[in-house]
Image (cartoon, rainbow, N blue to C red; front, side, top):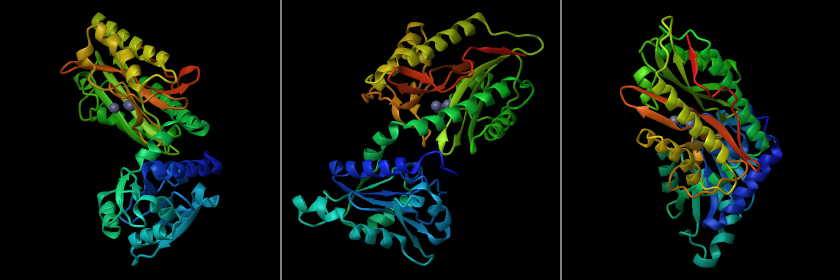
Length: 396
Ligand code: ZN
Ligand code: ZN
Ligand code: ZN
């Protein structure tokens, strides 16, 4: 997976900001396994393996990427390694990579500097190690056994706030991903749909996501008729019929960055079974709430306040009970990350935050409707990265 769109100086700044944030968390190093955090800090979009790959980033000094010998070539190819921002330490098949992590920590300048004050050189609570949140248990248990006196915490305390605000290149990648998904929505909406199974249409979506520029098509919810009442319906053998809605919620990754968009369609068939007035009115309530939310976006507004904007409109129309999930989630190198637009989240929106705006209403056994865009918070307000029409498409 190429990461050439993000220049090396971005990685230098991210590594430095992560290091600067460590002392405030009483931590002296980040231990980052394969995943979005590693890609964020180095540009390395590694595959998950049972062999340990780990970036050791001490609060002071250089970072080391510890990688299995057989993964050396892709590890060396990442932007941070190419630019000389990090050192590489390959381990041989019979070596203990956890001992290598411990040795790198031992050799780093950070430990004594941060720790001496309160605890005088012992590894105690003040000597925390922050591990990537999704590090496999098998790796964490081995780390704990190798470093029995260290206190472990989550890297998200340092990295989530950094990752939540996107720089210009990240926003451009998210925009490209969003537009690619928009094109797929248009292609699927052009039909034919009636008479095909959800699973068949879903497969077509995944193929088209790649054809339109994603590195990988990741999910394609095709929820027809009563299945549309289940927000995360798994596309199955149900055959799409005339006179019903279809909720399409699709996404993939482009250079690691996610698209995630939802449109609700209505297929009439030859006999022209159009949506009822009630369905159309409900669709308009949802479309209005989704647009009002986007229009309310501004730096400083709490995530929970934004959630309330659309939720109140839907509740006022009498459908509060049918809106059963949060309004949205941040997205970037992870599909779900801060800011979560949900009641209780006091996190203030900031310029550069990117999140989904996706209210939905669901009537079990009958139907559901959802509309989802990716939105970026700018100084001038919320800007949609999607451009596919949000109006109800009624088609044959
Ligand atoms: Zn979802
Ligand atoms: Zn979605
Ligand atoms: Zn979403």
